[in-house]
Length: 153
Image 1: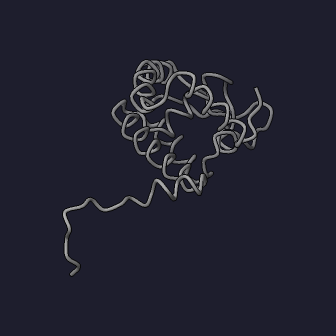
Image 2: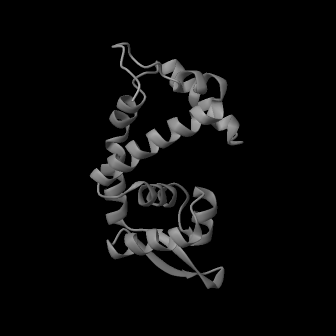
């Protein structure tokens, strides 16, 4: 066992993060994802269910496949999310009038209320999670992440 000198151990991660933005982004993403999951679970939805309700409210009824593709959630996971939301009464599945083989997922009034309650807590969550950044830095981060993801305004 090496002798202790009473000096603090140097931290390697700051150097690694400075040299490898990919590693830093992965670690930051994982930390934010854990915080978002915990916050969303406190709201009774979970991140995936929250995102599904948010998209359905924004764009209207759509297929599970469209939800899966747009939200970048695996199809098998999407089935479970929609099952959970349907069981809770937050969505309903109906035959798609344009494609009788497919089902359209539609948000219900209960789902709108659940989303509104969860959305009301998001600003405080974001302020707490990104407290190390100024508002301008948060805007800049949002723009840079959108650029990395190929998102256009």
